Amino acid sequence: MGCARDPIVRILGKGTVPRTCPVGLRSPIPVTRGSCGVKEEQPRFQSAADKRAHHNALERKRRDHIKDSFHSLRDSVPSLQGEKASRAQILDKATEYIQYMRRKNHTHQQDIDDLKRQNALLEQQVRALEKARSSAQLQTNYPSSDNSLYTNAKGGTISAFDGGSDSSSESEPEEPQSRKKLRMEAS
Image (tube, rainbow, N blue to C red; front, side, top):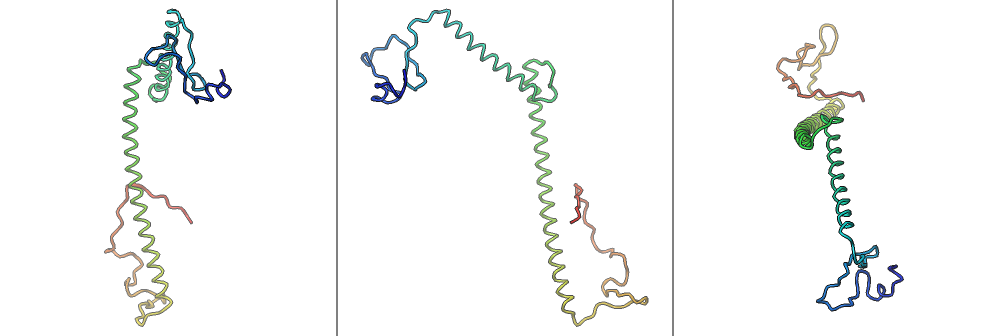
């Protein structure tokens, strides 16, 4: 029975079935939806053996699906791969693995957050250094009235601020060691 060619379907619309008996009475013929969306009649008499065979096939399909799902779960858990395990063991190990992965993800998220904070701090330092460099370049372009550079006995120039020593000042604070080592790339 074709959907588009059937005159009843064209008149009544898809999914509508004309009733041949009063509304209050039930039809003795079981009705199901066909491929067109129109209700179609099933065979009148189905033997008990056919019903049982159909039920058994559906149950076997359900059990096979559960079995395949447990095998898939077992193969997804590293400690169970390739091993034979009961369903209870599979569920226990899967639960342990999920909890382990949650902890690991949490730790990784903390590391990501720490690295983001470090990046923000470093970007802030870069901006401050660039600003200081640009202001230092402006100062060298416009010499100040106070000449802070002097010559030492050997003829080299020294700054009045460093006292002539080549070593760094003891009063400068050192940067604290960060938890992670940053990889520096040449640009």
